[in-house]
Image (cartoon, rainbow, N blue to C red; front, side, top):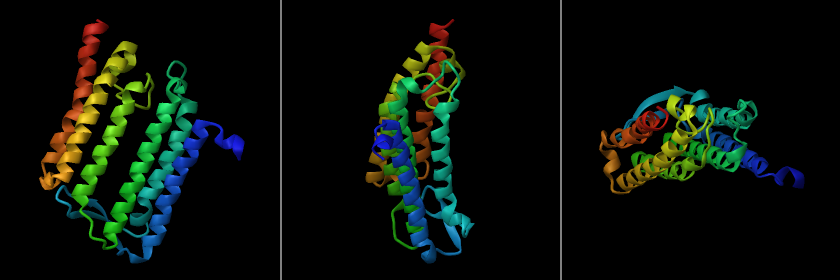
Length: 220
């Protein structure tokens, strides 16, 4: 046991699996209280607009978390030469834990709400999404060129400098966008249906467009 936990990546493997196990425990705990048609999707106003029958409606996101845990475990081993994750492995470990932790929280909130617990879904989703983006934004600039993590456009993958500068900007965009989502949630503005996608749009589009602009400036 001591040798297993002596590696930071092994500890990340264990903590990630812990998030998966907790997701399944929450699903089993709430299973008897959940209706046959389990709510699995809410609109931007917090109203249920999608359901899934048991047992898939209960265990879909825990199974998704398990699948992601396995994928995250395998990716470093299958990365091709020249795109290895070894030089930013600690950052990769933090990012995969952030994804699995976020999925665990979303799973718990969705199942609790489906079981009848009165939860302010728009507020919680906005706030959690914002915190998640802030975490990603703090670590994106520390990633290095690879095929699986980060802003992977043809232009970032073609040039190391474009990758580096694109991810520096992406870090700021993610943090500022995350802060905006948190503020919107806490201020009650999360119930304005169009605000969430409008806030997300620049977070997605700006780094992609900037990578193209940089490539035109640097590599041509």
